[in-house]
Image 1 (cartoon, rainbow, N blue to C red):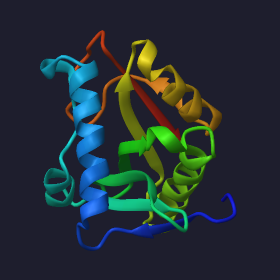
Image 2: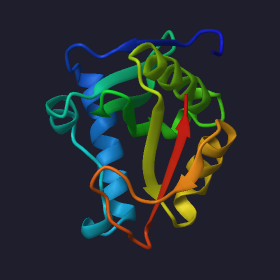
Image 3: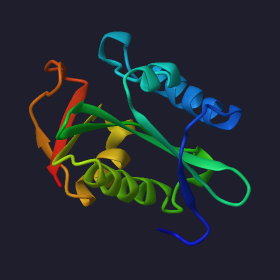
Image 4: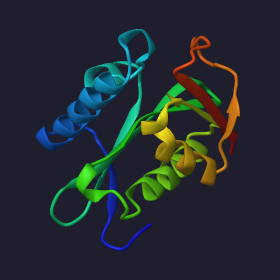
Length: 155
């Protein structure tokens, strides 16, 4: 993890976490038609049993990620988002490493994700590939969709 970052579980929704989740929600809805958009609100994440994490530096929240259980051994990475102003600082890599560590500690043996197939999602796909994710068929109730790609990795 990059020096100066701290990643903490979100136990209660604070204004800054809510703002960043909302920013992520707005961005995903602007980039993806509703029938292909699988983004979840903060309330929906918590209702689904997801564990939400916030990455902060000394001044502010820079990124968020959530780990949603699919079953006792399989989790889904959700709502991975880095504040635009913080991109290129290692926020995504630090969050990814934390999610992999947390999933292992929770007894999961697999973590999967859904992301967009189009150009705006290329940076995210490269991050996932660098962390050992490979492309896979839809999982957990998702259906084939030309605007989605599915990725997974064992832990």
